[in-house]
Length: 84
Image 1: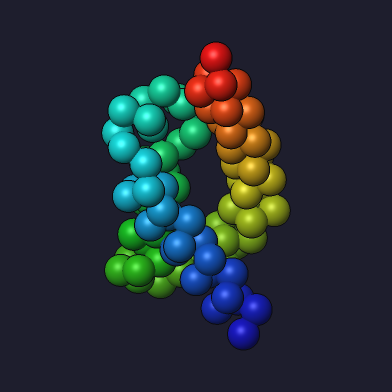
Image 2 (image 1 turned 45 degrees about the vertical axis):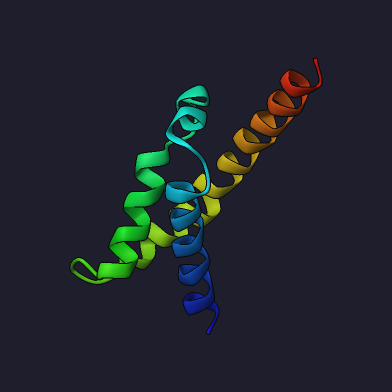
């Protein structure tokens, strides 16, 4: 159940990375790997050769914390820029 929930959340993150922001906004924040995030979503949804749980683990343990840090920077930059 935990694996399914984790994979589902990765799929949701990928979906949001594709559609929640405009291409213009994504261009502004080049440190976020938008294409790779959506690519992970595609692998999960379409099941290309199954889901490699070792990649899921690396994503969750290494990439998600880094993404969280990057998004914190984006949020701070966004609010700082919009308040000026």
